[in-house]
Amino acid sequence: MMMRSQEQELHEWVERLAGDPANAGNPLLAEFQKLAERHGKLLRQFRKIAKISDRLQTETKEMALQQRQFVLMVSHEFRTPLAIIDSASQMLELEPKLPVSAMPRVGKIRNAVQRMLHLIERCLTNDRLGTAAARPIAFDLAAMLTALVGEIGAAAGEHRFELHGLDRPAPIPGDRDLLAVVFSNLLENAVKYSPNGGTIRLDLSTGEGHVTVRITDQGIGVNAADAARLFDKYFRASNAAGTTGAGLGLHLARCIVDSHGGGISVASEPDRGSAFTVRLPVTKVEPPVVAKAVPVTAIAMAGIPVTEESS
Image (cartoon, rainbow, N blue to C red; front, side, top):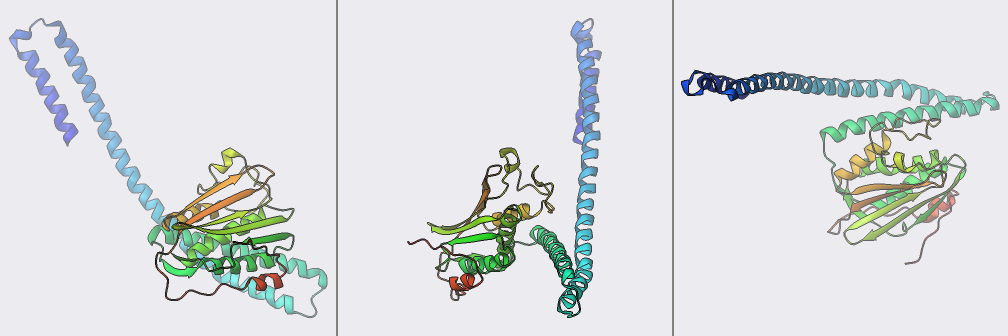
């Protein structure tokens, strides 16, 4: 409406100029008329662009809603058949008459099921981040990291884990489940992108007002251009074509860390490994109940070497 009134006013103004006897024979009048005509065309084009923009925004919102509903539906529908497959695989592992040669194949089935479940969890987490904020509750970050390393390290036989700074509690306020997604993804990536094994080092340190977690591997690494985009949604590095993944884990990690008021960064070089650093704010008050850290000896019993630096 505003653009339309401006066009009318301009047209009336040019008509008044043309009707004024004082402007008879004025060579500038023709130029004013041309400019007014061009201006009117521009205003009409702007109106069309505005209408197209509004329509695109509406369609984009509708598509985003449909995509979200589709992801939720598929994610929930996949859970039941995957649970059936996993249960059947477990039963096969317990079958005494199962040939020994079939056991690796059953293991591959279970691993594939777990990858699908992880992908579903990340899709659901991505949806949750879009609809709800993190729910901060004080918990011991050191205990959570110790437990995650125990779980992931047990299945990573060719990798050696070094843990530093996990011998003392590190209470922070945060959504434990969401932050578990962050660190499990970083640890799983450290294993996955280090196909030749090597050492995976986890450092936990506390500074003034924040806690820092650094996970370093000796894997394939990435170049500088890819490193700058690693946290983009669905982005995969150029040298990761032969490795399974959807390019969603690191994007979720950044979103979750951001929602906690922290930051995440990466330093990496091709064939020299990667180091991911997560900084999170620490609790300002002593929480009433903090879960005890899992004893480091529990990890040592699982066959994971532990190195603790002296303070």
